[in-house]
Length: 265
Ligand code: SAM
Ligand code: SF4
Image (tube, rainbow, N blue to C red; front, side, top):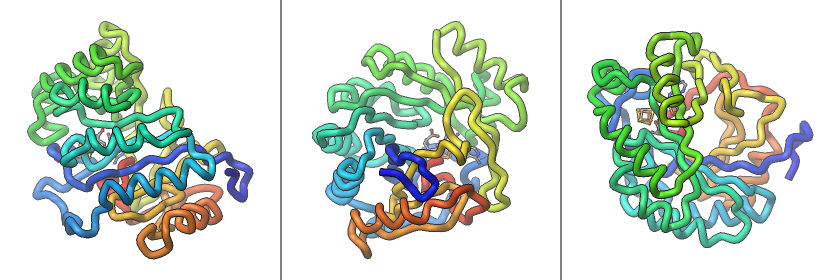
């Protein structure tokens, strides 16, 4: 389906939880966040219902994100439910990788096709500082397990301040080259202040070519990361929420009060 500006909308990013096992400085407050109530978070059947409608109107690519998708209990079951929907050509996940070693085989068997793993630093102390306590060795194990399980190509997402020439980003590039992995650099954004830019080596942040819709963990279909427009699937039903979101997708984003951990980046 096309939006009012002639953009083909074929990509849905699904945030399956607002919870996370890390506290990246640019994403979540250290003391934690105001979490959604469990009853406000979409159940798997509801998520599958939205994805089914999205596929019916032309979505072919679905990505699971969060919060951290691998802390949502039963995530493998959700992957299997989505895999069973005819018409999804690409079923992917963005994860911090901490629990990936544990889940990679089961995810691949359930039908996940590939993963993006967020990695901003390879130095254990730097990684722990950025994520407020994360163990980068768990991420390395997760990446290896994902490759062995066939979740390829495994791509890295690396958040940078300004340029890929920063020391941590260069170290990530060296690790990626040694392991034969692709890296996408994402400039650190501030949604509230409308600071966003294109993803280097990827496709995000480019309004003219934006093909995305987002489903937040509490059931809002959002046409733009940099706007507060959203339509509730529980109030309107999935089809209507999706159609209205496409109909009101802004030509270009401005700013938003949303948080990355609720809409998944
Ligand atoms: N927890 C998973 C992870 O970290 O990969 C998935 C959710 S996370 C919100 C999705 C992506 O958003 C990650 O690659 C993360 O680095 C990015 N992200 C979070 N906050 C950001 C910010 N302020 N600016 C740019 N990217 C951000
Ligand atoms: Fe968690 Fe991902 Fe946000 Fe880091 S970027 S706090 S891993 S949701």
